[in-house]
Length: 306
Image 1: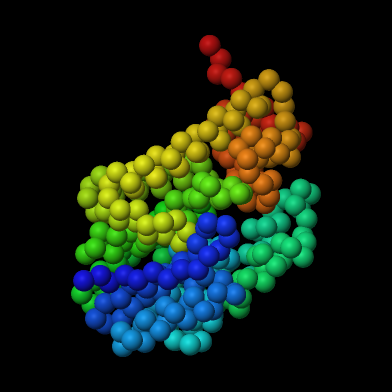
Image 2 (image 1 turned 30 degrees about the vertical axis):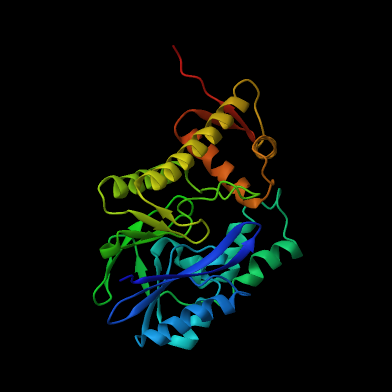
């Protein structure tokens, strides 16, 4: 008997937007709440909980991006559910203006505020909710007949969680397996931390704790081979980006804008704020590693001395 249900609607192109409900004999929890404009999707999940005749005790946000948290308060007002999230994402969940400003406008000299960006992100954030329970990974929810463990899968976002439904060996993700076929860089805020998360996912599969993965946007992955192939594709994607950053700065110093534009064109992605943040943070990590230097706004690769 399954203890997990998913609900979906199209987001854009071939990309879906999903929320999940995990339920036991005592209570249920909802994983993410989509965003404003997707009330019918979330209402479908709430109708299942009503049929199960168990309380929705918790909303668990995988991370603090707008398409995962936008109906938090909407659900709380209808159910009384408590809100749980990674402690590193609480500021963004509790303050929509901070979320929008730091997520979208981190580089105002390159990406300006606009009505289109406000419609895409700020207006879909909905009414913020207060986080009742800060998590960091390793916490357990005992729903009655089913046990759920949180797993820290940060990297796409500073502070991201997955939920492992132990009896079903199913892992519920937000965006820890980033979308590779989206028109923009789905991306990561830390290449180092994202690689660590990919190692965590490998370990969960190789030790037999996970045999199925469901997520907010990707089709379900069934079996060890399919999950490992998805993990390796993301690892190769990060490696390709890093190789490009090092190559393009090898013999000529480049501005962040130049690198952002060149990488976006080379990989067929829209040059927008998500990719800009990803590239800037990856460059920063390469500087911290001594593999690149930043001088007067120009990035240049540092070669090892022989």
